[in-house]
Length: 52
Image (cartoon, rainbow, N blue to C red; front, side, top):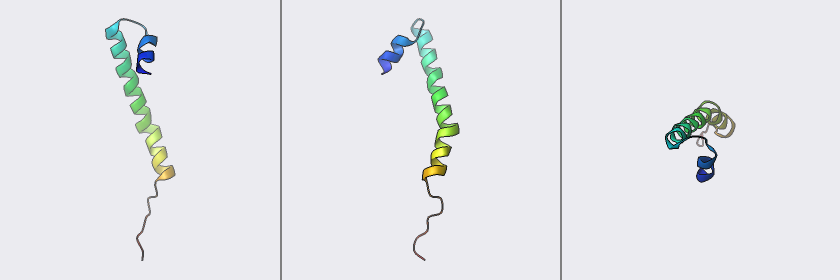
């Protein structure tokens, strides 16, 4: 997968490195802003109690 991404990106090596770093930052930002909060609200139970 990474080699295919490397071949698809245009430009010389230093431009590809900058593009890959930007893509990683974008993907992580999207995960932190939208994906992780949605998963926390949807799947994690916030009110867990132990036998009372």
